Length: 151
Length: 117
Length: 181
Image (cartoon, chains in turn orange, cyan, blue):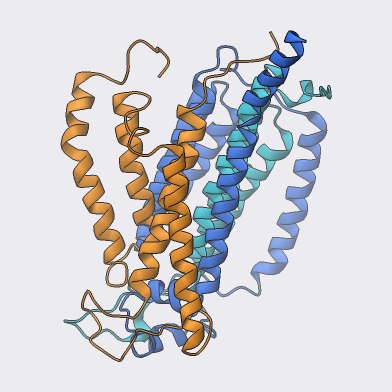
């Protein structure tokens, strides 16, 4: 990123990134969806998804993934995550209190579809954390090209 | 003394971080001091929760695991939140440092005395 | 637990290197090594959720720190210490050491936690929530307010970064308008 006429890194980095960025994204989605069965959860999975897009950006130059996710769309995804979490909390008000676990029905612990609203809350937190970190990365690294003002 | 040795080493790490915040002039060194102090606090919380011979706090479908043989899971939940909040604080400090460099041309905080409007 | 002491010693050595070396990029690399050693310590202390979160968050922090220290021509050297600050630092560290000696007598020894509050959670996790990961059931069902608060803090930090980094364009616009008038 220090030379503007040469976008991205060398050929080796670009080839390896093309092969592995899909696997990183898949691993992040696995950690989020199995958050109630194996270690992980929403925080780590959201950061891994943001790191997949950061990897794409660093290997292919300034705006490779900023075309997929501009600053406006990142803000929309982050707000979507927050609204989803809050609406799950407010629906629980009808059933017995704020943030009540209303989908849990003494079912089968250990399966993928179990534990009430915990997987849905994991997805909401991962959207919020991933989009927030990607927004911070875009602001500090990609969209900043100023130099010192006091010359 | 052997029972408290990890706590003493963790406290040495925290005091190195606090010394860097108070006694350094470069703003990047101050940010590194904040990061080191946060690592030391998270380490202390997880050290309190360890049980010798315990296992991690996840049940299983195929084995029978006694709840008394697990490590303490409550500080793990607190540390998970604290790590992400520490990242948010660090990102904000770095944004302030970049803006200060753009305005004054240096990272030295003893030279940022003028109030330019 | 000899590996724990070796890794703690490595972290302390890395911290001393990070704050004393003159090249800023080397200091950032040393902090990265401290984060990696911390993640391995979390694995040794049987905390896999915390280890996974720590290593990915530390990767993002090192990327942002390298951005702040790499593209500046003159600031690759650090500038020294403040004598008054160093004196106050040593004073407060001494006071904290005295307080620590008093406090450590009432702390449970390492490896045998008291667990008077938190023995509720592993016993009632499956019957109460149905999740077999006890830490997930704590952060998303029993203490979900803390997760809501953490989401709010992250949102505030993103807004803060966007606000701090935005006033460059506005100032240039005002300068252009003043020059035209």
